[in-house]
Image (cartoon, rainbow, N blue to C red; front, side, top):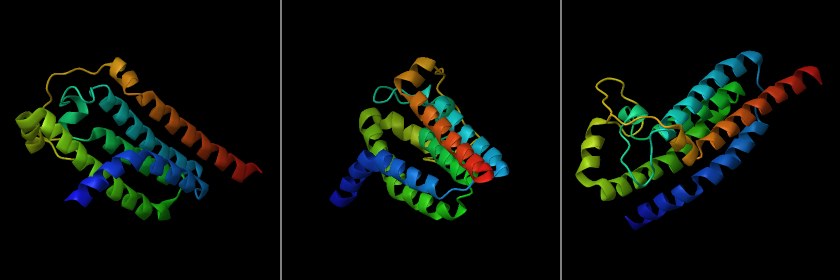
Length: 186
């Protein structure tokens, strides 16, 4: 058990830096087409919008978010990250990178989700357990969802610094567009 707890904490600490490095390496191997940019870019933007929506509902460490996308998934921020990354890989036609991305996500994000669940259970007790019984850990369940009546607030998006993720996504997509342009015209 101690090794598992230790890895959960390590994964929490290093998921963003490791993911950033992997993302930069992945970009080096991508060769987008106009079609792949449209399809993958649309998917990546959808993931980014999902993250923005989730960030407008969560008050980290204070309130158990159950409204908005939290009525469909207990981890909508990670769902958004997954969809964004999948979209970028498709946009860059880096299909062979998919197994590496999936392995990274399972090795880092699943333990993080479990560690955060433990924190939420300790903080919110029975209320969290009732929520966890009706809302899936990751993959959204669209039927039977019911929120808590909370509202989306842009101030939460800013407080959660989600605008940084949105800006990063736009930079990555601009790099892919630039790469396509360079490969076509130079």
